[in-house]
Length: 350
Image 1 (cartoon, rainbow, N blue to C red):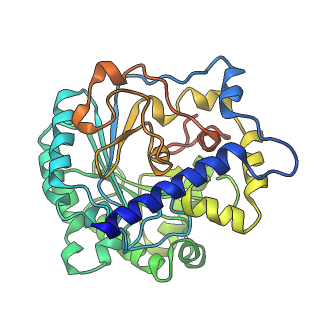
Image 2: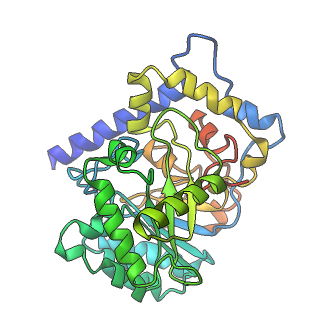
């Protein structure tokens, strides 16, 4: 118990430190413009939440990988796991709202011991798009996960999976040795039962994150390159590629500071700021639920411990009247979602 409390206090202290870095900066060439002032220039401050469409639930930080860019700081040693009690509270909200998408994330969400039960129960609630963000390698981790493709198919799960590159070197550099080979095998397993094939209703999408301190390229061009390379080299097919900007949070922020790229990266985000992207940022139609049931405007705010600005702060207190129309909590990391074509958990927003 004491060890758990100590770890929780350490996580809160780290979140506070990262918020301070983002707010105050470590800049040599002048202050970074405040994000709230930047969106005010186009009369978009304050950002307001619309009707809930996507309920994104983090069912735990435990993961079989330790990726260099991970904003969740997930790994095998993480013990934060959503309980069945909290899952039941989430199910109550799913039944009461008109949210059309349930987005399960982690860590590796499949490692939660109640994952399959939750998927089965949530499937009965009539969700139109049921997303599981799988790291692919979990499918090949050990025998108890080998039947995940069939389980996903049974419940018509929309599989969204990270794939940093179509080459072994760049993928393993970001996500760990052996990840590429296991990912390729997992993709073949999914293709074998119909996922990702042309005309198939079994959706398989990939997620691209840059491997360094730079913004992603054009999403459509990247998708074309990924599709050609994976088909030519491995006979693998998928539906869409989501290009996501790495936000300066957790491990990626630590990397930026350690590599002395933080200032340049933040200024690159500011210089690429696109007011059109602000109109479609994911926080306007999404609520993020943490493993312990607390509510956030997005999973990035969750990692920085910036809860929703509402009296309803926990899933057990969910109240549409209190949450719809709330002012969204913003900070300097929000530049990441509004740079270039914009970025969200569903890829580019413009």
